[in-house]
Amino acid sequence: MLLPDQIDIAGPFPRLTRRLRLGVVGGGRVSGMQAMAARLTDRWEVVAGAFSSDPVRAKAAAAKWSLPEDRCYISFEEMARTEAAREDGADAVMITTPNHLHYQNAVAFLEAGIDVLCDKPLTNEIREAEMLVALTGKTGCVFGVSYVMSCFPMIRQAREIVASGGIGRVNQIHVEFMQDWMTPEDVENAPHVKWRLDPARSGKTSCVGDIGTHAAHLAQFVSGLRMTGLRAHFHVCGAPKPLEDTVFMMARYHGHVPGTLMATRLAPGNRGGLRLRIFGSEGGLEWDLEQCERLKFSRFGEPDRILSRGHGHGISPETERFVRAARGFPEGMIEAWANLYSEFAMAVACRRDGRAPAQDWLGMPQVQDGAEGVRFIEASVKSNHSDGAWVEI
Image 1 (cartoon, rainbow, N blue to C red):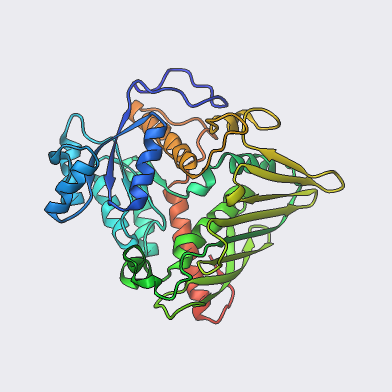
Image 2: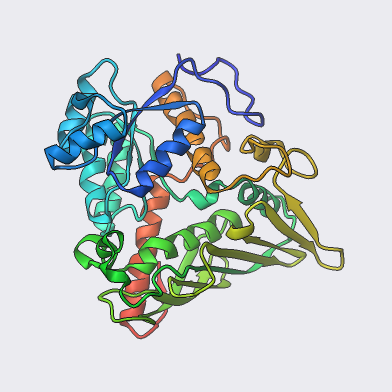
């Protein structure tokens, strides 16, 4: 057994009887950051990887990741088959490849009985996303999706405030994700950018599928309201590109709640400019990724409150379990990734212990959330092609 018999679902996540074994599929920058975050939880160790289909590069990756050469594979199919047969094989894998490979990667590991945490967007096609939802249900595997922005402590606190009626009835939602790294005219020549602008690998969108989906998921996660429709306009604001670098949207949520969503990579001065504002009949909430430890909570007619990440001072026990350092000692993106991997570890441990997680214990984005993200992308593409017409999701 990996978990203790009794778990306090409002308290810290429990210790496991052993570290879970993690495999890595994809060898880019994101995989290194996620591995660092997984290790930070002290619940995972990286044991295997499929970093390259080139044997020379795979061997070099083994040295880089401090792994034995026989645990570095040149194909994900071989990795899934071999690791599933090993007594000490990977319990789960992270999938950090370009978008067009997510589906076939995920299928191989799910069919081998290995749990999956996959980057977003889940797939480039709705049909493939729905097939992954069905296969996850059939295999019983855990399938997490890396909407990591939902794993910041103050986002969890914001979600609790909305759910408890702290701002009254939600009446509008505004979210934006402004970045500036695509501002240079020659940016598309950079190796890490080329696939993001290649429709064969990135899919039908670039900006929307990459950062727009983060914005859409965050708005729904905190508000508790599903986005039901949108009207979108795609733009190329900088040098000519085969896919959009900017999108402006009007959105509609359950109960006819209106909203806006904007995303761009050409906003000089904005690096991680993800901002969420939710207003209700009695108050509002505002959060900014670049000031991620603070949450502005306003009640109409009362002084504004600034809640800050740390123990106590209005932070709920459920939020405190995502806090590692004392108030005043900053935490950020790596810790948010670690929070995702902590919840993923609890879900994997529950499955391997043959028990279902307690209701409302884990808020980790799952395969269904990934499929919703693909539906959001598809609706935005359809709307843009129809000159910004309203499209139901």
